[in-house]
Length: 234
Image 1: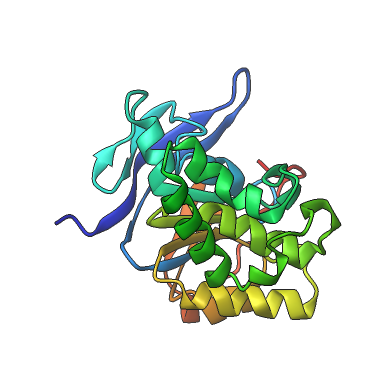
Image 2 (image 1 turned 45 degrees about the vertical axis):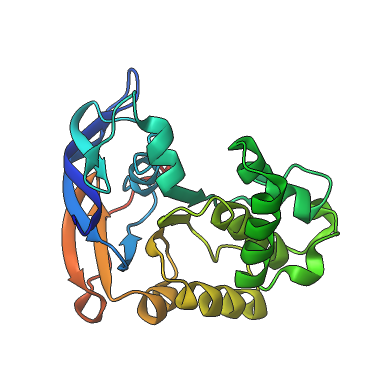
């Protein structure tokens, strides 16, 4: 069985009428790895993450998920395999209760009520969100929203979790809770972050991107912090 969860093969990408944001990006992440994507604002981190589950597609090159090249025909399957947790939790929470939000994904898959309940209970347990089940998402704290957002993704049972700046805006307690929960998950994890302590505590490997180019890919204990920045996050 192919143990590569995610692979970028010479991926290039330009927004319409804009400069080239990704300039030949290649790397692979193996199943079960927890890998950080590090880079200053404007380096291309967010654009790269959006390629992991076909929210963006390369101008040239290819992205593979679980050994299959992502195309228009199998983009839906890629999105089921790669669960993305966005930086702004309000982008993912829109139902009247936490339970309804966590159930939304499995319900859209056409699963039985019994299977939906099983997945909701599992996701709430994994994220320690069971006491929030009947709460209204918009009344939750930032940290609680972040955990519920993760639960909405886990209920879809992806093998790969992608996080965009997961500790941004969290206080110390919420940040510690996030680290503890993600550290216990068996999933492949790929996260973009400026939080270097988070990188050191959760990840064994880091990838540095500067101006759309990979400049480092290796152990976190020899990680050089990138020195190039623009004015706008891409």
